[in-house]
Image 1 (tube, rainbow, N blue to C red):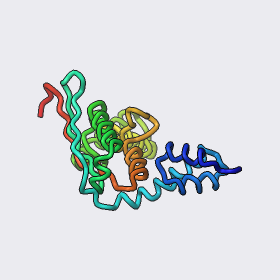
Image 2: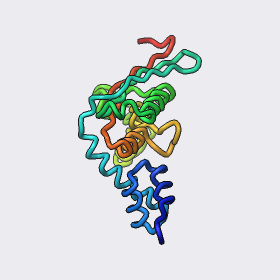
Image 3: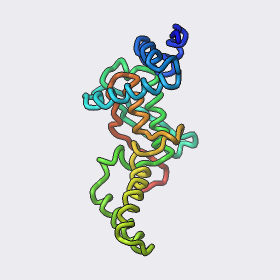
Length: 199
C-alpha cells in the first residue's frame, strides 16, 4: 500500500511523533493507522523509560481552585527545559493533574513515598480483615496483593485511574507525555487544601 503525505500528517497529528517516524511506522504496518499509532506508542514509551532517568529541573507551579472555592491544589510539575515548561500542552497536563488531585484526594505522589508506618498499618488491617473472613493462609496472601494494589490506587497519585480516562493511570499519562515531549517529566510535589479540614 502506498503511504501518502496525508496519512503521515494524520498520524503525526494523532501521535505527536516526527514525520519520518510516522512514515516508517505506516510502512511497517502496511498503512494501518491504528497499528502504526500503537507501534509508535510502544516505541515512544520504551524510550520514555530511558528519559525518566534524566534530571528534570525546570517546570511550573500550577494552582487550581475548585469552582466553589472550597478546595485548592498547588502542584509542582517538572520537566528538563524551559521550552517544554512554556508549552501550552505541558501547562494543560499540569492543570489536569491538579484537577485529579482535587477530585481523587491522593496522599502521596507515588508508592515509593508511602510512609512505612502507614503501609504497615494498612497491611495489619488487611490481614485482620482477611482472617475475619475465615480465609486459608495461602488465599490470604493472594488477596493481600490485590488489596494492596487497591490501596495504592487510592492513596498514590501515579497509581490512580485518570479522571478523564479511567482505562489509564496517571503514571501512564506521564509516560505518554514523556514520549511526546522527548523529556523527562516528574510530579515533584503537591498540596491539597480543603476548607474546614484539619491540618
